[in-house]
Image (cartoon, rainbow, N blue to C red; front, side):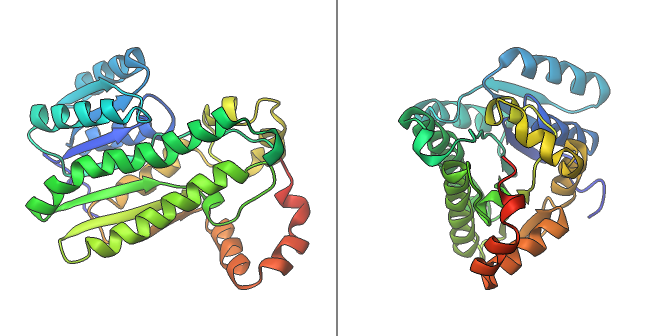
Length: 265
């Protein structure tokens, strides 16, 4: 993709206060895009806005938003669209997980993960879809996970949310296929971000998979490079996606052979 193809485009990013969300914002601003950034921490967004506008000649609007509050999504997203004059790309990046065995997960944790990872993602998409359909142009990028392809012990609920994201993404892609609106699923393995401060309280999983963890800058670049391209999925790392392909074909054998690795949490 041409480096300057994002010049003048308007990109919405949820969960933009840190991790790959903030890194994507930096890359998009560097390529000339105007940004609407959403997260629960307004102060972190304000700091990022100051950084980006001082480095690049772009417009950056920030909005405090918890995507699980669908009423706030319905209010905040149209406001951002109005203030920035439209929306060209939405990156649904907000999400969180808690790693527990199924019987240990509280109802509040289950509800919280589904409300953010699934309902919030759908709510944000639902607001921008009429605009993209009318202008017959746009791109929705949903940050899912390799966990949406291979469920592992202690991630039953998190995996279920990401399975739901992939199902929604695949259906949406087909609905929009004739409207020049692209839909991409991003399926990364573990990324070295603050995600695990909540997901992995004891630090066991991070310790076991540290050598395999992706850097947020690497993942962000892969996503930004795919903007406005007909990329169906971005799977990182590639070897992990190979495992998911084998899993589809031979699930029982895969679980037997890879059982020890799948129990790293």
